[in-house]
Every structure is written in C-alpha cells, then in structure tokens.
Length: 110
Image (tube, rainbow, N blue to C red; front, side, top):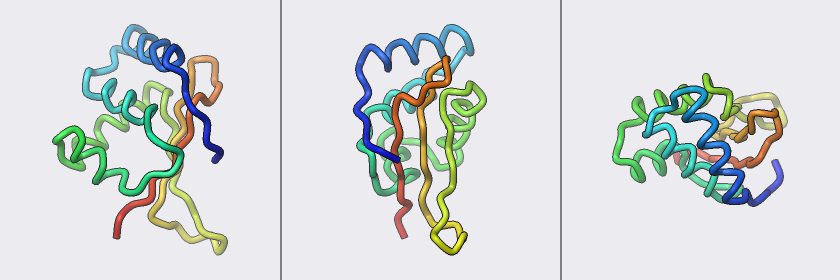
C-alpha cells in the first residue's frame, strides 16, 4: 500500500456522506476521522485506537464493523510470502464513488 495524504475536504465529504446516508454513529465517525489522519504505517491498531478513544477492543471492532457495513472501510488481514497470516492489517478508506482516498497498514503489537 502506498502512502497518500488525504485532504481535509475529502475527509469532510466522506464523513458527511456516511453520517447522512448511512446514519453512522458518532463513535464510528470519530474512528473514521482518526484513521484518515494516520500515517501509512502504524503499530498497534487495537492498542492505539482503544487508548485513543478509551474503549475496549470488542467495542472498537463493533465500530470498525459499522464502518465496513457502510462501505467506507475495507480491511484485510495481510499474509507473508508463504501465505501465512501475520499480525498486520491493511486498511483502505473508500469514497462513495469507489475511489480509495487513504490507505494504511497497522501492525499489531506482540
């Protein structure tokens, strides 16, 4: 996944679309905004977001699943060259027209 900096107007348009068209919760909107502002490679998806928002891992994934249902977030577990899953996720924020506006990789802590 390549690094691409997302523009503020793209984030606002994405947040407005999801909130108005899909009734996105305030918490999921906050997580979406946080993900849009992350660097292209970050350590500790669950740890970072749970600490940032003061929520449990189960609650965090509830909101991530809400973003996936809305179609604004695509998440994929990454594999090594042998096809085995590794403790990393590729995330892509997708605009309503299907264009990927931001990509990042989260590597879970051991």
